[in-house]
Amino acid sequence: MARAIVNTIRLTPGDVMTDLAESAVAIDAANGMRVVVAARAEHVAIRISNTHASPHQVTSPGIAGTGNSRGQYGAAGPGGSNPVEPDFVSTAIAASTGVRWLSLPARFFRSADNSYWLNFEALHAGSIVALEFS
Image (cartoon, rainbow, N blue to C red; front, top):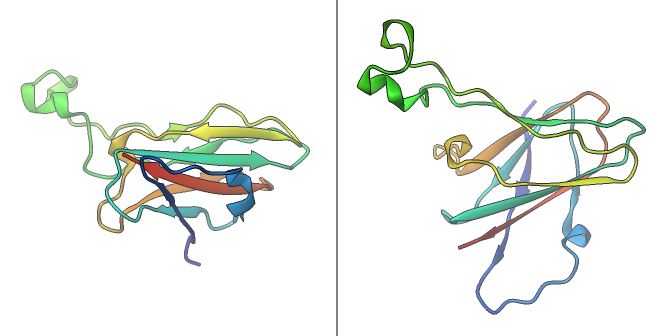
């Protein structure tokens, strides 16, 4: 099944916003989520809550072909290999009422579909909202 989509909310200079939690959507832990960026923003902040009784982590999988760029200079390791960057894994989001803000490194941005992919642990329940700004 396809990943559920979360569209970012664009914050422009001079905007005033209330609580973003009001715009949040439920997490689809089984299929993962796609945070779709409307325009190539300089910054994307993702707010994730956890309402499950256990703490949970969120993972953004590494993208094939975005390996360690040092390999082109021969300093990447045995044989000058170009290993894939490790997945981004958040610190645990506290049980029941936890909230975590994520700002993923640019190397996790998937330009083919203008998005960041997020994977959730089984039983992770809560909500997600994303904000983009320059």
